[in-house]
Length: 483
Image (cartoon, rainbow, N blue to C red; front, top):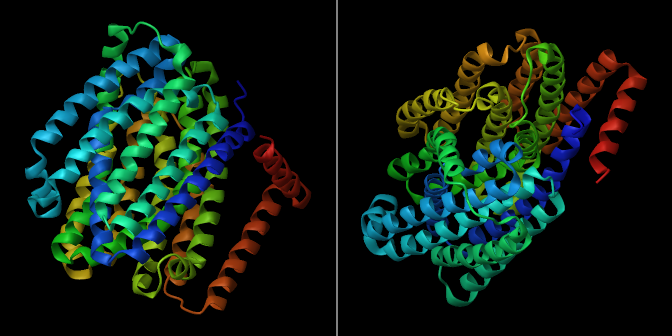
C-alpha cells in the first residue's frame, strides 16, 4: 500500500467527490423542506434527524470503526459475517425498545405523544440501516470507492425524490422524511447485500465479542459527540422555539459543507487506510515526518475552504432558503471553523485509536461535551443562536487540546510540527472570520478573500519556492484527478 501524503489525499478526493454529490442532494432536500413547509415544520424535521442520529449511534455500538480496525487483521469474510451478527443483535434490541417506549420518547423529543407512530417508523429504519453498515465498511476497507459511492448516491437520490413526492402530493410533512429514509434504506440494504454476498460465511462468536468490546469505547465517544453536535437544538427549542431551531439547523447544515467536502473525506480515508496499521519503534521518526506533512497540508487546505465558504455564506443562504433564514449567516462561519478544528483533533487521536482497547478515547469528547452543555445553558438564554454557535466553537477547541494531551504519550508526536504552521493558519482563520461574517457588502468580503489568497501564495512560494509551489499544486491536482 502506498503510504504517502499524495496517495492519502488522492483517496480523500475520491471520498470528497462522493460526499459532494450526496451533500448537493441533501441541500436540494433542505431547499424543498424550507420552501414547501413552514419554519416550525422544518424544525420538527431537524428534531427527527437529530433523534435518528443518536438512535443509530446506539444501534451500531461502534461497529463501523471496529470493522475498519479488524478486517485486514482477521480477514474480510469472517469479519463481515461477524459484523452482520453484531448489527442484527444490536439493531433488534434498539428497535424493540423504541417501539415499546415510543409514546414517552415522543413526549420527550416533540413535547407531545402524537408522534409515536413516527418513532415506530424510526425503529424499523434502525434495523435496516444497521444491517447495511458491515457491507459498506468492507467496501471502504477494500477501497472500492466507485461501488461504495454509487450505492450511497443512488440511495440519497431515492430518498430526496420520495420525500418531495410525499410532501407535494400527500402533505405528510415530517412523516414524508421518515418514509423516504425507510424506503431508500431498503434499496441500499438490498444492493449492499448483493455486492458483498460472496464474502458471507459462518460468523466467529469470538470475533463478534471483540467487535463489541472495541466498539463500546467508540459507542461512548459517539454518544458524547452526538450530544456535542445536537444538544444545542434541544436548548434552542426550550428557550427560543421551533423557528430558531430551523434557522440554526440550516446554518449548521450549510456550515457542514466543509465537512462533506473535505473533513469527512480526509477522516474516512485516514481511518480506512491507517487505523489497522502497526508501527514499530524504529519507524517512529519517519511516521512523525509523514504525520507533520499531512497535518500541515490538511490545515492549509481546510482553512482555505473554510474562508471561501465564509465569504459566500450570505449568498448561499439566499440561494437555498431565502431572506427569512439570513440570521443563519454567522452560524455558518462558526460551524465551519469548528469542523476544520475537529479534523485536526480526530487525526491526532490516531495514537489512541490504534490500541486494541482504546480506553482513553471517550475522555476528550466527554470533557468537550460537558463544556458545551455548560456554555449552552449559560449563553443560549441570553444570546440565542449566536450563543449556541460560540459554545460549539469553544467546545471543539477544548476537544482538540485535551485529545492532544492524552494521545501525546502513546503517539509521541513532536509538538513543534503540530503547532508551528497549523496554528498560524488557524489564527489567520479566526481573524478573517471575525471580520468577514459581519460584512454585508460582497465586494468587501471578496477583497479580504483576495488578500488571504495572495498571502497564502506568498507563504507557499517562500516555503517551496515559486517553481516548487507550482510543482506541488500540479502533483496534488494530478493525484486527485487520477481516479
